[in-house]
Amino acid sequence: MGFDVNYFLSNFPALLWGAVLTVELSILSILIGFFLGVLIGLVRLSKFFLPRSMAIVYINCIRGTPMLVQLFLIYYGLPQVGLKLTPFVAALAGMAMNDSAYVAEITRGAIQSIDRGQWEAARASGLNYFQMMRHVIFPQALKRMLPPLGNEFIQLLKASSLVSTIAMVELTRTAQLIASATFRPMELLVGAALIYLAMNLILSFSLGRLESRLV
Image 1 (tube, helix red, strand yellow):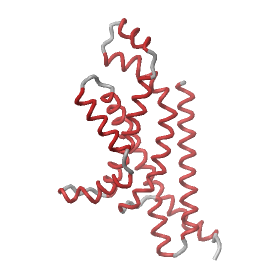
Image 2 (spheres, rainbow, N blue to C red; image 1 turned 60 degrees about the horizontal axis):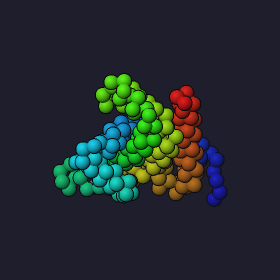
Image 3 (cartoon, rainbow, N blue to C red; image 1 turned 90 degrees about the vertical axis):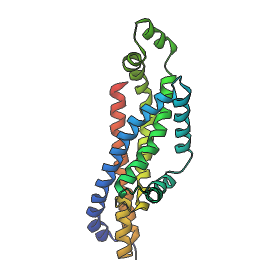
Image 4 (cartoon, one colour; image 1 turned 180 degrees about the vertical axis):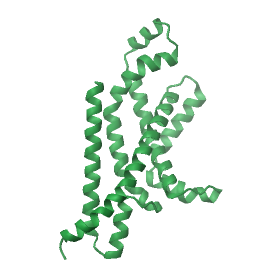
């Protein structure tokens, strides 16, 4: 049958509409996952045993299990205990939760990499822990977090295709639905791949510009 360029072009706008939902879902997941991950990372560094232990268990459980399984547990498992979520909310919860565990470890590593002299200087200035973290430690740690955060966000954007398995009609699911009706998957999958590539290139470029401004 070959590759039909006209068929590819005629269905490309539909794929773009699916990509809009992918972008919305990914941006919200990144934002929620980032703030939640930073908080968990700080708790992971706490001197208090119970919250630190809870953070460690959370991070290990999330990082040690596939995101696909996590999505299934949220979308198909929670209704068994009386909590039914829409595909979008379930996808957002799964992606943000998964992202937060990796961001937490990135946060922990970046903060621990700050020279002890910076901590001692901040304490000598009379700053309490929260002031020291806000004005001295975290701004420096954030610069070191950007490269691994960029990699994590790119991985999350690509992993968003997994939400198609829980009836979320985003880019991948849109391609699957059209292909199932027309029996021509090649053009649609190529189109989806090109859109994912474009989104990742834009995200990489944006993160690179942000990193160059902060460093």
